[in-house]
Length: 306
Ligand code: KIV
Image 1 (tube, rainbow, N blue to C red):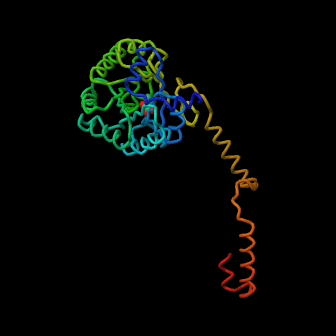
Image 2 (image 1 turned 120 degrees about the vertical axis):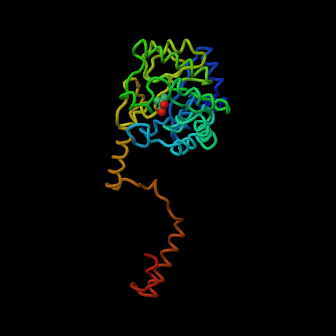
Image 3 (image 1 turned 90 degrees about the vertical axis):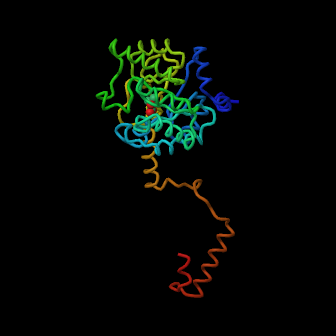
């Protein structure tokens, strides 16, 4: 069995799998995914987790930020991912204003992502101000992943896409927030765009895994937006991203080649065409010719064959 096959045939990744990876010091791998085909490929590759991030608002739906994403958008994409992945842990973002109002609202919407979206866990952004929401969701048996540092749903409050926790005071507050999220019941915390030293301090203080994005190598795991990794997004790519492919250029090349092939009649070629059984075709032509000879070339009956 190929290594990717053995990974896809493996056991379902759970919160316990991730916790034991932290204990063993084995790096945890997450990527975002928003559709069926990517989910199949990610699952086969042996990834630990697929995050149906609200980043889909930017890289799939073309918004400038994640704020317009709705719960219905998320559920639609979650269901597609769930149809493609069997083994990886599936985590969905609670979108902007689906959990900030009250713990009850947070619980209800987290429940929809699990029930309708067929997810294994939910993620929400923020620290101490989200402790009550985390407790409410966890009390219903739903695993919650926290998200600290650059929290994209607060981009306007943060004054843009900026690295967080750069001063001692801001870093101390972020460490406190991480401990509060752990106490509230989070099973993991994403650290986005924070200095590597700070991510290391948080990772050593928490018993639960940290998953970094632009947070250095000391985190227990890493996550990237799959469109950034594949070079599929034609707009801004953050500096912390490593591009493993340039699929946007490849897509443009393929589209241009297709257009040229159609215009120059190179496509479809014989191997792309369906054909009739030769005898059936001969019978058809003979039938048309007989009808035309009976009614004349401008007769009504022959008109049916054109
Ligand atoms: O929405 C998302 O893709 C995320 C990752 C950047 C962690 O939250």
